[in-house]
Structures are given as C-alpha cells and as structure tokens.
Amino acid sequence: MTLAVAAVAVLVLVASAIVLSGTSSADRYVSELDQVVDEPERSGVVIRCGTNEERHLNADNPVVSPGIPFGAHHTHEYVGNKSADALSTDDSLAAASTTCEKDDRSTYYWPVLRLTDGTGPDAHADGGGLHGNTGEVLEPTSVEIRYEGSPVSAVLPMPRFLRLITGDPSAFTSGYGPNTRARWGCADKPGRYTAKYPLCGNATTLRSYDFGSCWDGNNTDSASHRTHVAFPLAGGACPPRTFPIPRLHVTVGYHIPKGRPFAIDSFAEELRDPATDHAMFINVMPEAVMNELAGHLNGSR
Image (cartoon, rainbow, N blue to C red; front, side, top):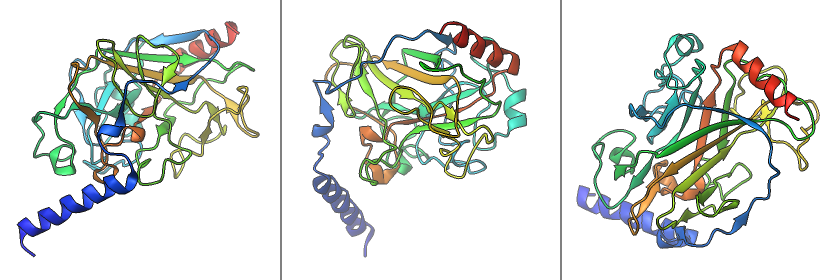
C-alpha cells in the first residue's frame, strides 16, 4: 500500500467513526446549555495560582503515565508546581517553585484548548500534530482553584502527595461511561452546563472540574488512579469506609473569538470529543496550610 493510499484509508476510518458515533463536528457545538446544576452555596477557600502566564505546557501526565515522556499523547496546561512533568517524583515536586500563593506546590492540569482553524507551533510535535491535535493553543483568561467543605460533616486534611483524576479522557470510545464528567458553560449563564462545546458569544467560555472528596483513609494513589477517592453519594455523604476531605473544584475561563471553531486536545481515537475533558491533581500543599484550610472549612459549617 502506498503512503497516499494509506493516508486516504486513515481519513476514511476517521470519517466513518464520526458518522457511526452520530456526532459530527458541528453537532458538538451548542448554543443552549442543557444541564442545570442546583448546588447549595457553601463557603470555600480559593488558592490563587495565576493563569499559567509562563506557559508551562507538555504532553506528559505525571499522575497516569509517570516516567513516560509524551505519555499523554496530548498537551496539558499547568498551574501550580513549575516542575511537573513525566519525570516528577514526590521529592522533586516538593523541592520545586510554584505559581500558587501560600507556597502551595501542588500541580493542577488539564488538556489545552485550541482554535482549530489555524496552525500551532507544535503541528509536527508529540502531543500536537503528531497525535492529531492541531491549532493555536488558547491561553486561559481565568483559573479558579477552590476547596469546599462537606455539607454533612467535617473534613479531614488531604494527605500530602494525594493524586486525583476527574473526567474520562476515553469517554468517546468507552461510550460515555460513569467516569464522564465534562462540564462546559458560559459565564453569563451560571448554573447551566453542557457536555458539548458551548457557543457563548461574547461571554467567557468555562470548563469546570469537580474532584472526588471521599478518601479511603490509607492510599495516596491506586492502580486506576480513582478507587482510593470516591465521589459523595446523593445528599453529600461519603460511601461506607471512606472519609470526607476538601472537595477540589477548578474552573478555567477562556475568551474565544466569536465564530471561530475550537476543541480540546485528546487521544487521536477520541476525535477531540468535548466529553473527554478531564483534569488531574497532585497535592503538594504544605501540611500546615492544608490543616489550616480544612479547619477553616470545618469552622464555616
């Protein structure tokens, strides 16, 4: 098979996948936000970490693919720890500098968002064009790192070096299973969200990430990077044999030029589906600061 024929075959396979999924690229953009989240107001603690002004980007994943450069196969955007990459260890993270206040050396990261009608500088690089992720990377206009308490009980401080993931980077190929937690919104429509790309007009486009907040009490990680921390049950109580810890909520805002197409980075087989949005976290907050944070949340109940 010639290279030209092979390339055509690949394009046909990709096109077939889109048709079979029933979601063309146009179907992935919506003007109406179809999910309403009615969450009670709870006091929280915000840690200011900037918006990645220094442009800390890489195609690594120190939570899911430690030790494997370019293991993410898509590019991540980071705030917090300035050293986070595939070769990070607990010791290297603890020794690094940070963009966050209060000496919070934690690392917070998620896939970049790109304008897809242009060409980015990584068009021929790992994590970029070599893995099917093309376009100009958009810089966030806002990043909020918020920790909230439990609505039903006091919380324990997070253990140092706790690793968390939220969302499913394989949501498209896995049939949008229970780990899918993509939440897209518009700043002018609070409380309303969608799992598709929202068309927000002149309003800020938002990506929101909620992390599990019920810890098993023993482990800072697990084989799946999920089973050591669960999500609360309906009503906010933790499942049996788990303990409430501060609930991490990250909101990232972007100004997207009106009328221009955009998409997140993803694994090539996920076709940049908006439902594959996800985020990761490693807690490297000083123990005294985490204890103070938990105490503040408990005192505000």
